Image 1 (cartoon, one colour):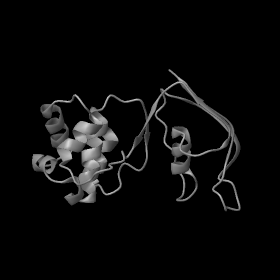
Image 2 (cartoon, rainbow, N blue to C red; image 1 turned 135 degrees about the vertical axis):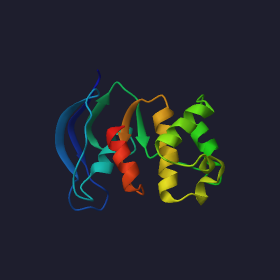
Image 3 (cartoon, rainbow, N blue to C red; image 1 turned 45 degrees about the vertical axis):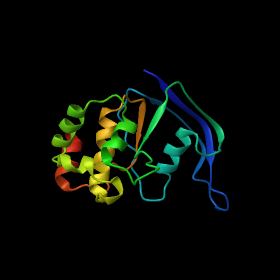
Image 4 (cartoon, rainbow, N blue to C red; image 1 turned 180 degrees about the vertical axis):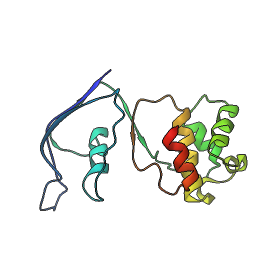
Amino acid sequence: MSLISVNNLTFGYDGSFNNIFENVSFNIDTDWKLGLIGRNGKGKTTFLKLLQGKYEYRGTISKSVDVDYFPFEVTNKNRMSIEIVNEIAPNVEDWEIIKELNLLNSDIEILYRNFNLLSGGEQIKILLISLFLKGNNFLLIDEPTNHLDIETRNYLVYY
């Protein structure tokens, strides 16, 4: 168990009239499975980016764990999907990738297509496979069901 401690966090975007967070304090136990729920534009993704150290803020965020953010950023999408999986999750074996593809009801052939030619749902599945196979730190998962069909969404709920 580790703690992520947020103390007196204040953050607002430049030029914005109101802060998104103002003097917010709380602790997160990394053993928890925690979901942030709120309306669009209320700061969920911003908070995850603050945990990653992507923005400057007032207050303190202290953590003794490394974090991984999903969806992973794919810098060169003009590569085969298998290359992207192997980059995100090095040292995995092909059978592990194929097993995860089967669990997500996907064809093996998507591994050998350029990532940028896949549908949004297929791209998310490739990134989810990478997430499942990667040795993970504390996971910050942002909207993992975007672009997924209902069958795959239901699978993820019970995975």
